[in-house]
Length: 60
Image (cartoon, rainbow, N blue to C red):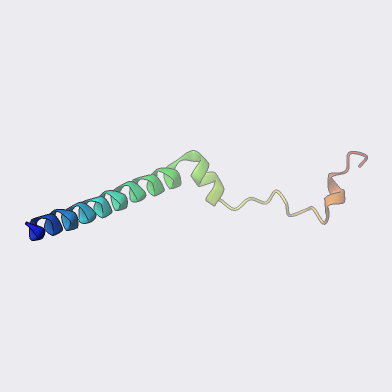
């Protein structure tokens, strides 16, 4: 009886771990292949010419 409970518990843990890995991989690939994910990974040159926060001053 105790070995059956232990066996079922181990199977549940292994199954949940596999489910976690599948969901983690799917979400990670989904984000990386999306337009937003690709734009975040692409290096941007927007802040290159700014030397300080004063460059954002509206009087310039």
